Image (cartoon, rainbow, N blue to C red; front, side):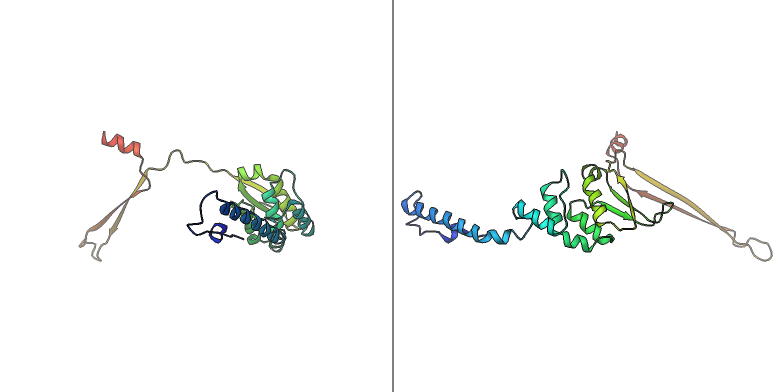
Length: 214
């Protein structure tokens, strides 16, 4: 509950003298009712795995068939407990897995099935190299718990690298010619030639422009 205690206990300007006896009484009353408010809100907070005490989160995890992974962060553990039902409903489907990895903080993933030159029962998961290195135990656990029974899962990594030499520009020149002759073999119309030139600029390199100006 978001309660503006200052606004509720605001005194009249002729009474709001700092550090006065009346102001000390006001501060004591605010502290008391804050504690009462926290005590009343405590049971409701225990129903949410994101705000509940860790001991109660363990009970909710046992109820929802969630086991804490070694070296797993508490935040990730709480998320898996909170969304256990949604993860179980979406198990085995692409949309369910995309939703699950997004909630777990790994949105960069691609799922490919029936990959050519690969056995039909293999599903390829493409992940960032950093995500697979830091969360390999979590991903293994997800594949065991939510993967399809008759499928095998393989990992492939995607590495993002900065573009050191961006493309500058490219051009295209084309020439098309048409010829026509009459029945008496005399070239009345002659030859018609059409010249077409196209130029596309993709990016501009500041260093090249500096050289051209010099």
